[in-house]
Length: 391
Ligand code: ADP
Ligand code: MG
Image (tube, rainbow, N blue to C red):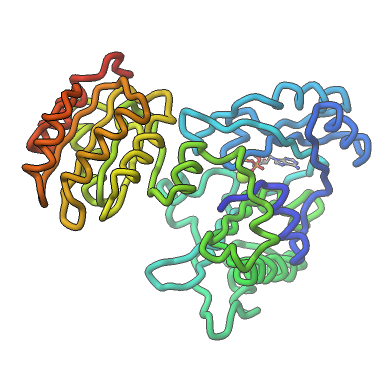
C-alpha cells in the first residue's frame, strides 16, 4: 500500500528525519492560507498523488507570493496528473502540500528496499539524486552505493558512517546522515514497510541535510497489525477496477488496452497477454480467476472486466485442471444473462470436461466465438474489436 508524500514525511519526521515545515490543503484558498501561516518569501506547492515524477509532469512548483500559491493550487485541484509512473490514465489531485522553499546545494538519493536475493533490507544511495533511480541505475550504475542490513544486528553506526563517506559527505553532515539512515531503518522495520525513498535528500546552502521528498510503501499482509498505517489509505489514488476486484478476491491488474481478459492461472494469463500483443491487440487487464471457479465467480469476473469502459471485446481462456469447462461455460452463459452482455465474447476451453463445456456454449444460442487454441482465440478477439484502439 502506498501513501502520500506528506504522510511519509510526517512518519519519517517522527523517527527523526529533518523535513521542511509545510501544511496540507484541500482547496486553493487553504493553500494560500498555508503559505501565510508558514511565513517566508517562497513556497513550493506539491500535488499529492501516489506517484513520483510529479516535478516533470508539472505537479511541483516554486511560488513567490500567496496569490501565486493559491492560483497554482487552483490549476491542480480536481485535475488529473499524468506522470511517467501513473500510466496514461493518470491520478486525480485532491490534496496539495505547501512547504517552505529550500535552498538546495546538492540533491542525493536514498532508498530502503527489500532485496529478495539476500532476503534483507538493502540501502541504495547516490550522490546524484533528483532523477529517477531507474534512469540512474541504467545510465550510471557506478554512481549507486548499495548496502545490505544484517537483521541480527540491524543497521550499525559504522555502516551508516561508511555510507556517508562513500557519498562524499563531510563534517557535521556525517552525523546527520547517520541520524537519517537510522530513522529510515527504524521506520521501515517498525512499521512493516516495503520501501522508503527520499529523493531528493538535499544538502542545503548552509550544509544541512533535509528530506525534500518522501515515499513509503507498506506490506499489505501486515496492515492488520498496523491500524495507524492502514488508516492512511487513500482510495482516490487506487485504480477503481483493481479495488473492485480485490473486494471479490480476484487477482486483477488494470491495463490500457481494450481486450478484456478472463483467464485461470497467472502463467496462462501472461501467455495470453503475449499472444494478444502478437496478434496486434492490447489487453485491458490481467485477471486470474484461479482454480475451481464457480459460475458465480465467472459472473463476477465479467462484472469486473466490464467495469472498464475501454473494454470492447472479452477473451475467456481456460485450461481446466482443477476447474471444469462445463462450470466455466455455464458461468459465461449466466454472465450473458445477468450482466446483459452486448460485447463480442471469444472463448477458448481446454482440459477437464471440454466437450461438455463446448456443448453448453453451442446450445446457448449466444453469439460466442469458440476456439480450440490460444493463438486462434487471440486472433479472433483482435478481429472482433468494433473500435480498435491504437496500439
Ligand atoms: P517528484 O519526485 O514527484 O518529482 P519531488 O518532491 O522530488 O517530486 O520534487 C521534484 C523536485 O522539486 C525536487 O527534485 C526538487 O528539486 C524540487 N523541490 C521539491 N520540494 C522542494 C522544496 N521544498 N524546495 C525547493 N525545491 C523543491
Ligand atoms: Mg522525488
